[in-house]
Image (cartoon, rainbow, N blue to C red):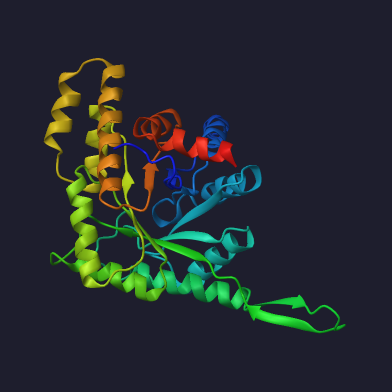
Length: 319
């Protein structure tokens, strides 16, 4: 795909996760600076199972908010939470200045199975979407602006709304009970107020494109942003498959396994991710969301390979 230099830059964004040590924090702050300099639409920060990284997640979101011009997007999960706990957490994030969220149901806490009696007051991501909206509405129900020439009078407007993204699953959710349940869930999230969907990883462009078409046929109208993960080693591929339950991508797996050199494995992963990005953009994707693994060089290389980053910078320099 050749980039049309007369067209607007292709939107892109990144995902990072909270650091565990002070040294990792310093390194990640440097990475954030590199990612922010590329001009993404937003940088999202993950949230550990059962809120295990809540404080570190919020610290990183604050860092992005204070030290860059990029919108920070907070992941939030609700499984295992009471309404009061979830409300308090949402308010804490809003009070910190965070107004963009990715609402996730999340996995059951360690030691708790899917069928256990207590999985929290919120049963789905759609209910979390609604709760985020309600907390924001209660916190800032309206705004006031003075009316020129009328002392003491003010114009009242509705309070600012939050942006709420949700997850989408191109190859189906691992807990889906029937083939279209994940699309039904996406419709419910949209009805609850979601403004954007971000997909979990996929390895074939047709998986994303077919999913988008099925979703549109079912009535989903919000943008569906493809999440692309550069896989640069056999070890990373195995770990990702363990976490996601995705089927083994045979061609990519073989290519990584037969190549012994780490630098060559990286090039294989970059080429695969760049190829996915090109194909989904040609198929109408509204942008690209890249899982950064807390480094900047790989995801920025993918954007350069596709031509997105150079196009974006050329448009910025022309302003």
